[in-house]
Image 1 (cartoon, each protein chain N blue to C red):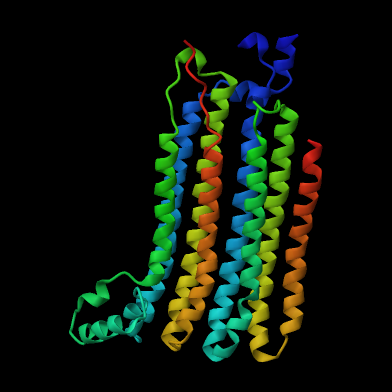
Image 2 (cartoon, rainbow over the protein chains, first blue to last red):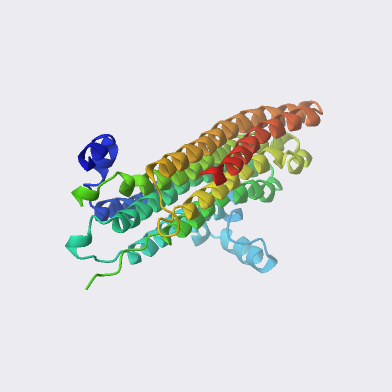
Length: 207
Length: 158
């Protein structure tokens, strides 16, 4: 009777034997690991185009800095007249969009690991504990892969932004608007990941 | 545990995976659409900078796909609550299928928006084809909107 019910769904029989802590740990690892992969991928796509284009138009490395306000521009122009100025070592603005994706992954991984609670070993395979493990796993997958595609998207747009900025400096701010749309995708992943991690309620310890 | 095992303990796995699929695949489509049309806009903007702001349309359409996935993922994940309403394998599979439907539709719509947007903005720079490519991107976006409406209509039947 109960044995035949269990036999009819072999996925369930296999899944229910895996500890929820396995799922949680893998989910947290994917949240941060794949997010950082996306950020790194985006940074190298942008960075290679940026540095290559800067050979003929060196102003784009400093142009892509934090703000366009007048005091900053004055400071930057005086600094860039010096050889090997530290301006060229500053991180371009576009790259910061990519790095935000990695920071989203770190934040969500920290939030997910605070959701973990220890449960006595008699209760590990309770339905509620299993559900909490699955919730953390799915949350990690969502954040990781959403940030991966977001980092790729921002990287590709950033590289074309740098190239078009080298041709015509008025284009930089316009293409940056497109990049803001791209970076919203990582934010969607973080929002859904945090909403789903609220479902990870472990059972109260039975006395 | 073995005496009461009915398979429903693992139903939330499929439910949460459905929510994950909804968001992840829609984001993939949105990213492809944004990136591909963004590259087209940047390339076109070198020659015709005044057309850049008008050519943001495919990027906006692609971004909306990500929002569709977000909505469905939140609806699914708040619907998985075994304490409020018992959650059988049927519900788990239904959520998985609705998440996959939304996500994969968003992925395909995003790829179409990317390809059409890229070609459209480049052609728009040469000839004023604005209405043509705009209509195409809106039609593609509407297909995903239909999927979203189907899912929201059928969801209360679970």
